[in-house]
Image (tube, rainbow, N blue to C red):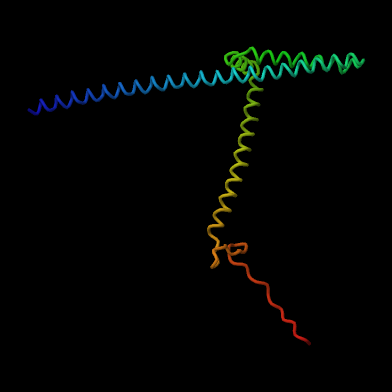
Length: 184
């Protein structure tokens, strides 16, 4: 009898392990699907935004080219040449952003990092420093807001419910001394 119960318990344990394994596999598959879906969404957004931004940048390049042509018509050759060179670069950037996709951008970014690791590291340090300053500034603001709210809650109240003014250490301020003016 004891052996039958032990074998039933082992069988139940094996069934539980099998069920747990199936659940774990389903969770992993679902996580993999969600990761793929999130990646596709981010890539789609990046493609859409870069296309929109690329069109705006290209329009800026066209406007610079027109300005350069106007300057050339007015006989101002140096500013016209500068505007033309700038418009070439801006239009090239606009085409890159408009025609590229997330894979192209990531590949170019990786190659830049491989060719210039010191610049990539410097950019990373600069971004980290900027992020730390932002977090410090926002934490100071939150801390001061919390302190102000705490001091308002700790302030003694008058009969009307209004908070009494307090001195520097939270004590009620002392009234100024009364000076009597007696005729001499």
